[in-house]
Image 1 (tube, rainbow, N blue to C red):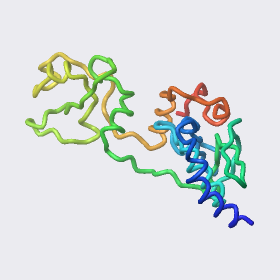
Image 2 (image 1 turned 90 degrees about the horizontal axis):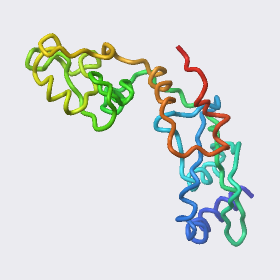
Image 3 (image 1 turned 180 degrees about the horizontal axis):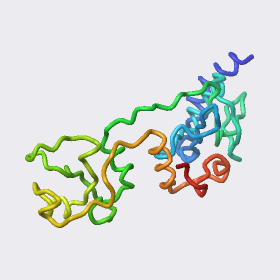
Length: 202
């Protein structure tokens, strides 16, 4: 029976269901790990409704909340999932990749010299011309004016100060940092699983 339904969906979703894909594109599903925590907070772990429906029919997730809206084919009606939980636990990565995004997230998307947010680049605290390396401990987010002002000089010669010393963050620290940046849209059914207002773990 499950195979018949899956086959029906595979055919009908592409035909009848996807005719309304434009209207349904605003129905993302929050994806939780098997421990009922989001896979990530920033960016928030979301699937399209199509991926959520497919995963449910493949028995890879449990649906824990649904939208009022449905999608249907001539033989099947499906409530659109709004929250799904993985049946198999995905172990979070312990190593934090040294990427531009993770660097900005560590620094809370603020210039580490003046504290302003907005258009950011990155700066070597100890300039490369002076032997500074590209590492967590020597690179910070910086706005263009502060970056230009500092140039290839050391902090001592510019009179500028860092808001906090740069260091390599732990994976859990970055996940918690992401909780400070909720997306513009949060569906009501997601709130019990996100805890945006909860005190962050130390």
